[in-house]
Image 1: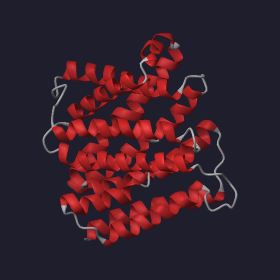
Image 2: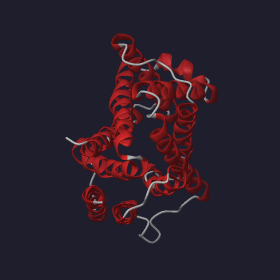
Image 3: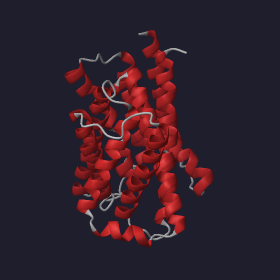
Image 4: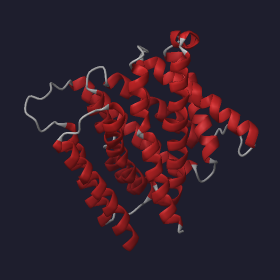
Length: 290
């Protein structure tokens, strides 16, 4: 199998695993735990699992002090914080959809900094993907929601900083291993979040075994696997096409929520899902021809 095909599979798998984060998040929020504590628990469990893996396997070093990776850590944590703040003013669904509009930014930045070419596939894919996100969002329904300007700004900032995080990943994987990058980013996240939310560190001692189990599931299925697979995929495909394909996380989340959480898919969400899937297929097939 060619590197390009491997890259496609890796990023689609990354999106599939990342889509479990919202499902697991719903379960853990239903236990009454605060969102800031959920984020801290996610990073804490990630450090434990990755640390054990690296200690046993001795596959890669624990840490790297590469500037690209250190900045990745800052932007990854900033994404979580901006998103956390955005959902105070917007619905979680809308904040997530705005976050996943980041491929357009990544494509532009990749041209500026990495001199990547934006081909026909990416232009068509971006248009279809954005139309799909718009269909899923429900923003076309007049009076369906009152949008907070502050919430929109925070959600857009989450998309911007996540786009920069993905872009930096294309550079960092050239010098450091993906497991080392993931551990370093997670450790930075834990330290920064502990400083911002110091009381939550003690609150970790009072969580229930069920909450702890969900936290470790979020770390493994919704953090470690998707981050590692995304970095490996970006290494083979580049950041712009990789981030575009990763949008299939939204349809995966909607599809999983239907049988697992019993959530109802509206007709426009189905249309949006189909558009995003088509955008991904278009990007893959035309990119191969180019």
